Image 1 (cartoon, rainbow, N blue to C red):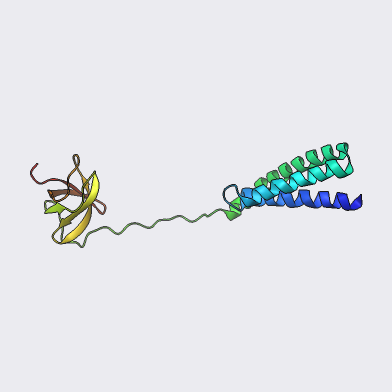
Image 2 (image 1 turned 90 degrees about the horizontal axis):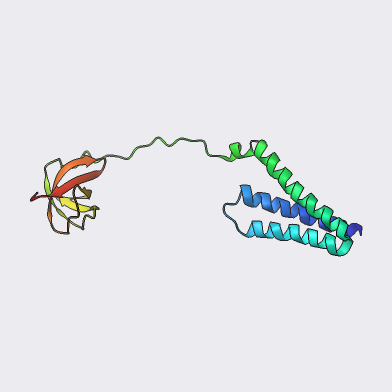
Length: 158
C-alpha cells in the first residue's frame, strides 16, 4: 500500500512538473504536455484502481489543486519577468545613399512590378514599387522618389 501511494505521488508530481515545463519553458503544445497529462492521469488511475474510489477522488482533486497552485505561484513569483527579453532594438536599415541613382533617372523593369519588383537604373539593380498600377517586365520607368531603400517609380511614358 505504501509503495502504491509513493508511485501515485511521484506520478502526480512528475506530471505537474512536465505540465509547468510545457506551459512556461517549451513553446507550443507537444510531448512534455502530453506526457504530463499522461502522468497525472496515470497517478489518478492508479489511485482509483489500487487504493480506493475515495482515494482516487482525493488524488484527482489534489492533482488539479496542485497544478493550479504551482501556476499561480509561478505567475506571482516574477519568474516570467526574469525570463523575458528586455532589450530594445534601435538599429536602422542602411539607406541607399551612395548609389549614383537619383529622382528623375530612367530605367527598365527587370521583373513585373505588381506593385513591388526590381528595376535596373544606371547598371544598378534596385527594389522598386509602382506608383500607379502594375508595370510589366522590360517597360521603361522613371524614379519619382525614394522611400528608404525602395524606389517609387512610374511608367516613363506617363
